[in-house]
Image (cartoon, rainbow, N blue to C red):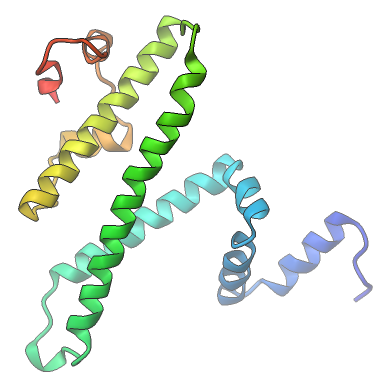
Length: 184
């Protein structure tokens, strides 16, 4: 094989070398550790969608595996320590997600100064705020009770498959009547 020169030739060479799934996964992981590569990959709608789907599938598989109890003789002596580490990592991930949302909001909302969004943009923001509120309520419930189950309506809302009516999104704006989000 000649030494690849153009970008396309280099891409094709990498594809040839990474034809094996294990190799491709390892290379993709290594590449995504580069901040610039991760940033550009996150801009690809299809790649982002597939990554989010894979992440959701992994969480679902982990939840299903956790729901299947092991027979006492099958449990490793280090299993309790591993579960404690997993719980700590999950806690840190959740705290990080909350922090990221607050930090992003703190950075972006001031940029809205003296701007009025069109009504369709306001509706989209309202629908996404409904999702955020539902997610926050779910997190609060899970943290206080240990129950992580959700009903189908909540699942649809969090997946973005359910759209709240425009009047509900408007009712949830700051200064709205307390309990306006009770419809969720």
